[in-house]
Structure formats: C-alpha cells, structure tokens
Length: 265
Length: 265
DNA sequence: CGAGCGCTTGAGTTCCCTCAATGGTAGTGG
DNA sequence: CCACTACCATTGAGGGAACTCAAGCGCTCG
Image (cartoon, rainbow over all chains, first blue to last red; front, side, top):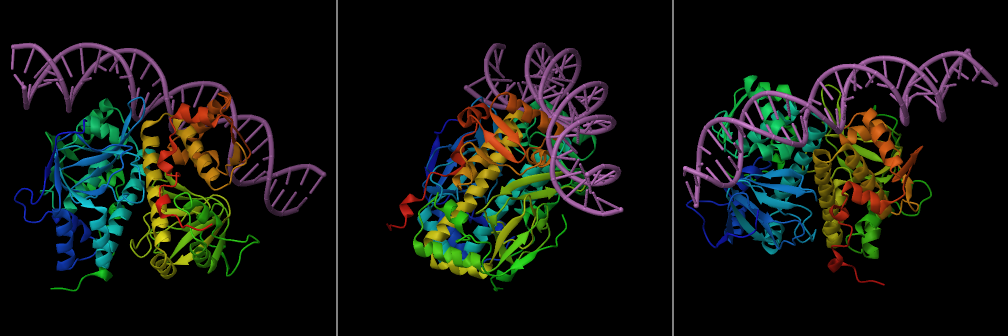
C-alpha cells in the first residue's frame, strides 16, 4: 500500500447525477431530509473528488488530515498494524461512509485508512462541514447519528471477536455487511458484492486465513451462503441470523429520528 | 444485577467541593477551560445525583434513557450479553466518563451499563446539555473530543482482542486502565485500584477465567506487576508497555486542542 | 509462459478451553 | 463465637479449537 497514484478530479465524477446519493440514503434511515438539506450535502461533496486505486492507502497513522473524506464509491477500511506485522481491520467504509470526522478535534490519526477496491472519495473541508451543520440543524443531527452508529458497530465488533466462535464471527460479519449494503440499495435479492480476500476477512475477525477458509466451507455446506468470485449470496438470511445470533438493532436503521422529519411532499 | 436500590439525592453529594472535578480534569487534557466553563459544568452536574450499589445495572439494553449520566465516582462498564449467557464487557467507565451521549439521537440503548463498584452518577438532562454546549463553544469541542477518544479506545480494544496473545491482551488492558487513572490523578506512584474480578477481566478480553488467572501469574513472575486484593502495582510501566506493544497515542492525552485554550492566568 | 496471488488441503502443534476440585476470605445468622 | 454459605482465586488434567507450516492448484496478467 503505497500512497501515490491519486487522481485529483475537480468537478463532477462519472455520469452519476448526485454524488452524495449514498450518504443521503444512509441519513434518511434516521430522518427524512428536505430538498435543501440534500442540495447542501451535494454541493459540499462536489467541491473536490479523488480516485484511489484498490489496495492503496488513503490516510496513514500519524497523518494530520486537513479535510473529511466521504466515500462515494467502492470499499475501504480502517486498520491498525502492530510492529511485527499483525494487522487488524477495524471497520469497513462503504459508499456513504465518512472517514475522519476527527478533523479539527483530534489532530493526529491513530490508525490508517486503506482501500479494498478502487474508491472515489469527496474531500470536504472542515470549513464546509461547519457551515453545513451550522445552517442545517437536521443535517447536524443526522451526521451525529451517523457517527453514533459507527461507534455502535465498533462495539458490536468487540463482542463479535471477543465472545463468538469462528463460525459465528464470520456469519455475523457477512450478515452485517449484507444488511448495510441492502440499506444502501446495493444488494440484488439475496446477493451482494464481497470484494474481500480471505486474508482480509481473517484480519477482520481475528482468525488465520486457513481457518477462515475452513469456516467458509462450513457456512457453505450448511446451505447458508454461496461465495464465488467476489459475489456473496445469503440463501437464508433469517436462518443465518439465528445461527450466529445477529441482531440488527445496533445498526439503528429504524428511523429513530422520525420526529425530526422534514415535512415535504 | 437488578435495577432497584437507587437513592436519589438532590443537591450536593459527600463532602467533595466540586462534582465535575474528574470530567474537568479529563477535558483539560484536550484544552484548558475558563472558570466560567468549569462553573457551567459544575452547575449541570449538581442538578441531580444518584448512588448505585456495586454489581448493579444503571441502564439496560432496550431502555430509552431520558438523560445523560456522568460518572462522578466509582467504576462502571458497558456490556452486552448473548442469548446463551456469554457476556462481553465493551468499555470501562471511570470517574469523569459520560455514559449516554446517545440521548436524543439514538432512541434505544443497544447495550447495558452496569456498575463494578458502588457508583455515584450525575444525571444531566438533554436540555441542560444543549444549553451548555450552545453557550460554550470550547466545552462543546471538548465534549466532542471526549466522545472521539471513547471511540478510539473502542477501536484499540478491537485490535487488542483480535490480534494480541493472552499475555499481551491482559497487559495492554492493565496499561490502559493505569494510564487513564493516572491522567485523572487516581494513581499513587506505580499503584492503582483495580476493583475487577478475574471473571470480569475474562469477559473483557475474551478469555476464560482460568486462563486469565494463569496469565496474571505470568505477568507477576515476569516481575512486571503485582496484584493483591484490589490493588494493582505496575513495577515497570515502560517494560510492560514494550512487552505488550502498548502505545498511548490512541488516548489522545497530549492537549491536541491547545489552540483553543482559554487564556486566563 | 512464467510469475504472482489467492484459494484449498493435509499434518502436526499449541494455545486456550472445559471440567472439577481445593483453599482462602468475607459475610450471615444462630 | 463458630458453623455455614457464597464468592473468588488457584491448580490439575484432558480435550478441542484454531494456529503454523508446507505444498498444490487455478486464475490472471504482463
């Protein structure tokens, strides 16, 4: 992972109409936004975008980032490396996820962020973010919700790695990723993309590659999932959830901020 | 852990001069506060305090808390229980720690909070908190810092449980607790209180009680620590830190918000 | 077509778990 | 004051989950 090969693209990227599309979808699991809220987000995301190739670093531990990165497209992850090379993946960043809300409060990154696939990010300056939240109370609340949900996910990962068996850990991870992708409209029936190598999965749930491989085979032969190429299919989501004690409440997708809804048609 | 036996004490508790003492000490690791900032915090903490006996619940998963709890005294923890009884302790709450910043954003608790020792908490209403942060920008920043640090600790725990050996995990936990207590002025030379049972330690780092016991003996016979009764002594903090790869940067105790300092004598 | 990477499999080992029993200490009540 | 209980720490023995090492297979890509 060498930090280079970064294309700076100012202005619109690709042919997609809205850049903040996935962030907006995500936030609307908390509360519905007004047209103006959405336009303000879109404007902030349009200022400056960046494309990073796969398996490359976005930010490295010790860096002092100056702006906030919003993932527009692709998968990234937070990770930490120990001196002897052991690595732990701490979080996955999917489209609509924000990378460094720390900016302007925590000076120095205490972990790194790297890509899994090629990724497009929007760089939002601290300044833009401040005017955005100052002018739109509902957005400020929604962004606060987003960071609280990220913290809740982190807590659940602690439980997952600390208490569950290999089978449960892996199944739980797959459930979480599937449900998160589905909430963004990025699944197709029981199927979604899973661009992770088995080594990356291993570094996520604290197992060896060999054991991840064998545990995947268990999940397959239990008829719960298929995983070929980079495509995951969960045949019995209900069944898998029960088998691994997955309870989606920690994702807080049930519109807990509905009392703040923008009342527009 | 049955929720009962809660003494409501309105007004001052004990004979300590300031209630918000530890919170203030903690926040001043980020930026120095003005006298007025501190008085505002103190006022908020004084409204209503509560005493909870040891090994009891403060809030239970599924509850919808109405106010924010600030730990004034004693140890508490966040935890989650699986259906079959396995339990993971997710975080320790020491004096000066805030429990449920979620309030007014996340409706429902996705985990429980219980006490380790007897605990005194201040209940701060969402309303008080809002006026506090609205009127004091520096405090708002400092409280934001506090929640970002809590998130950083959670990430480090993921690394700890996911990648480290039993010996390292346990040593790392002891380092973290010691350093956090020291930053509050709650250590005495190389010694601090450690009111945890071995079963609680086990549920924190994902090991069995038996193995925690044996690993503690390893740490002792390596001459790194003593642990008798509820008193921990770390004989060689430097050495322990090296042995378990503990790097305190994730605690962000180095006054990263010094540019916001109140300039008073 | 060789190189590199990721996935898979086998064999042997080790770390950590479970079960079970013991001892110490503090709290309770007769 | 002493039995009685409860909880916590400790120890031994045996078992199993997950690890390491090593090799082979099948892609993709330059």
